[in-house]
Image 1 (cartoon, rainbow, N blue to C red):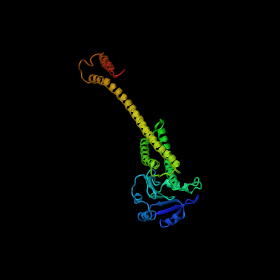
Image 2: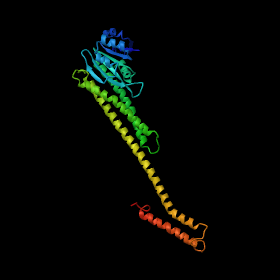
Image 3: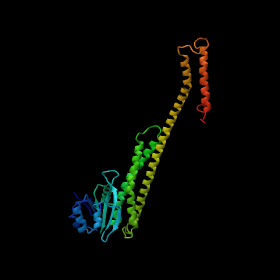
Image 4: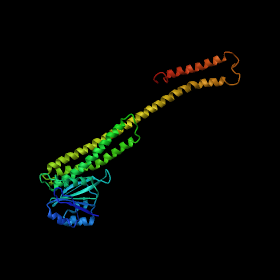
Length: 335
């Protein structure tokens, strides 16, 4: 169901509920203000925008389709559409359409947006108008600035979270089992933010470069300041994304190093066990042969038989140790 709310530009006044049928009469009695149309019914809203406001049909089509972020100056109005954050889902965005005509800013949206909530607070403020300024370009500037401020808050949370993950990566006293997943997640979130903030920056830069006079000389300074802010946001997102990637690579490198060290320790143990087994195998064979309950090679018939057998075992063990040493398996680097 279509919900229409109107602010007539009075300092400190709250927004008032209205209907599409009542809007022409309200707008005729006031020099300007803000009209917010939420979840518009296509048929009735099209009729209002086209017949009552006489907006261009291409701009009206963008209100009910998936548009591209853009600006356009028509004969009797200006139109812009850009992405703003959806309040229902943290990093999802929805398009916000804005018409500018004769002191009035008309927004069309299909979702709750934190940027709209912030703009509503600003326009209700008694200090909203600066030097009596209340034209449509200034209203749009404040709306865009509210959307940008919302992204700044999101980036502040991402910055704090990234700092926390970096501390976890370099914390040798504790293990964090889901650290790699968290790093992948924040990398994906920053990528989603880029998809929204970069087009927003392009829209504002396009307003300043427009040859059709989208931005008036009166508000040019405000838009230039806003353009610097959106550009800094894009730069911050890129830096955070690079930081997240670097932290993730560092974590993977640390994990690989710990795994390599563990494998090296295991290999060293296996090497020592192999050396011991290699030495004991022929000794065990000698002991087994001479321990048989048979009389062969004169075994068991003389008083020095045990000594001979032990000397034989020691000789075999010593010979193997010397062979392993010269081969480099013990006592030095392997050749």
